[in-house]
Amino acid sequence: YSTDGGVNWVSSTLASSGTWTGVAAGLIGTSTYFVAVASGGTAAAYSPDGGANWIATGALPASATWSGISYGNNRFVAISSGSTNAAFSTNGTTWTLSTLPSSSTWNEIIYGDDVFLIAATGTTDALTSFTGETGSFTARTLAASSTWDSLAYSFYTGQGFGRFVLTNQSTTALEINLTSANHQLGTGPHVVSAVPSRSTIRFVARTTGIVN
Image (cartoon, rainbow, N blue to C red; front, side):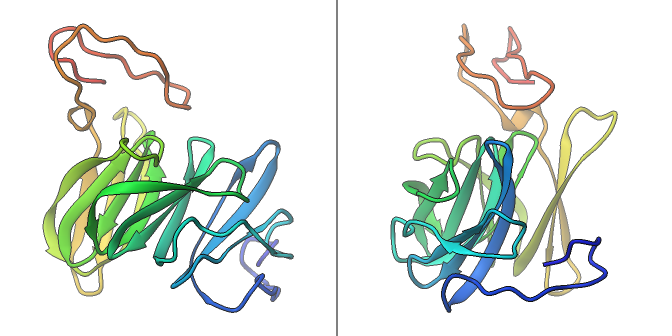
């Protein structure tokens, strides 16, 4: 871990030996937790002190090829490759199993524009979810199939929505814009019972039922 902008690094020891595949940071109450997951079992760990010390969390809810983790909407969401297993944690220490709508080579997850975006390598499979809970996932289709291995997000000032960029191991990059068309509801009328945690509120269009 580094406390000076990445200039100098200090070694720390994870809670157990394993194939650690992902780490994410987020607020639990007023404290920042770093949470990591390992592939091929149920191991996960958290650090309440900036990565200096690591403590084993409760076991992940299934033994799986856990491949990534992200934080958003006041929770951590972890995914696994080659299965429908996912998990979420609202406290960084205990986990709840959730089920993805399909099995794929899920290997990238990131939070932005109020959603978790999940992408699979070697396919055009993608998913979005506001919460990471069972039943909350919507299937998406990437513009191309490739060995996707890196995913990033940035909010675009002036456009009102964010941009996701997915890259592979060769020369391909894929831009994913989550516009209002990605948040469709059935025909109205609609009742908004919850608002995503951000400073702007999406609204339901009267004629199309689309959340803008």
